[in-house]
Image (cartoon, rainbow, N blue to C red; front, side, top):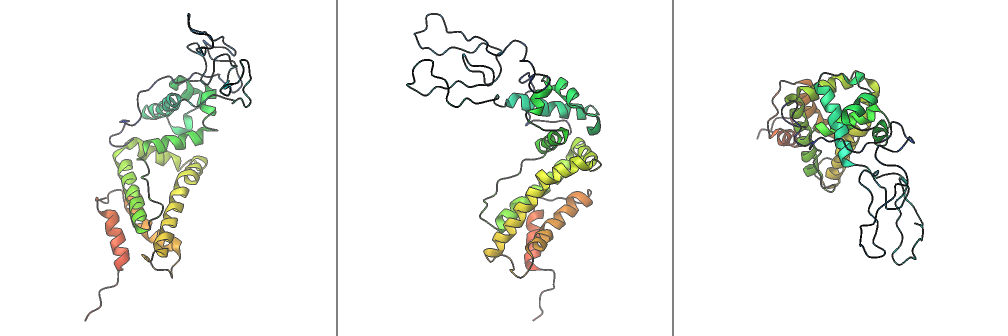
Length: 279
């Protein structure tokens, strides 16, 4: 989510998604049962694949038990069993969207992160608890994905450039800072996350850590390409690039974040802070 609080233009239409049992391994969803008979359209030629009835669980194939995709190799005799049946059902993008939207809607309604339960989220999303647990092992993992969904997407980098990739990642840090400033909800979520160590550690390990590693690797590429000095510790160089942007975006919420800030930081570091030598 970017822009004004409550605006989720990237989220798509909310819908109930797939309804699943209330706990893993429970009964099949309403309207479908394991082994639901498939129907062949009237008048269809012999061998026409049967159609799975509407409402059957995701991943159910004609004539196959729930959770098994009965794929038979081409040319095999009728009745040949699938040599490697696939277990489980494919993830439903609609269900994931509904779950993320449900968490955001509850937070927008004033619910604190600590007060949200899987049961409440499932009820709001119109899915079963098992649908959530198939995607996220716990609330912390789900909440991290909610925050990532609300933040601007990480931009792609070449993975081969040095300073050019550093600039892209610094600019991404600036736009995330702008997003937090423009969204009271996102700002509030980050404030709550920092008071919940398990949630903050999950976010740091799965989001902040990989971002920092990507920047350090870009510094290594810049050093190898001769764009930066090779007599300094690469992590120190990374801190010198990231530090000014973090000060502006985190520690000085009133400081301006102009469009050319990333370029100005890079230029200042490359030119150094010592005055020009007098002739």
